[in-house]
Image (cartoon, rainbow, N blue to C red; front, side, top):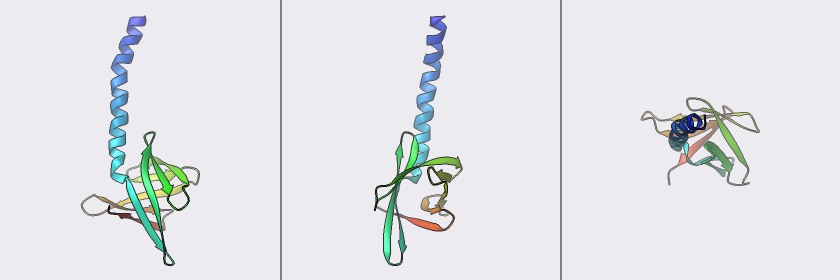
Length: 110
């Protein structure tokens, strides 16, 4: 019985690690710094990965929220329940993020 359990763990283990790595690699297209200007004031957010999920950080306050994947480029900001949609250009490159359907943050090229 122990042999069967060990065999199952050996077979399942590498796939689980591979799936996590593939998920993190898929999320890297969203990473970066985004800006939005309102009434002459420019604010910045940073999108990073933590524990296999996207993490949004408001750089002016340090406040952080996980972004839960829904489908495609659509996420929901946990704790606020705000919609988050990453926008792409014609080449498929992520260029901005639309929060709550109205706040457009443009990706900053570093």
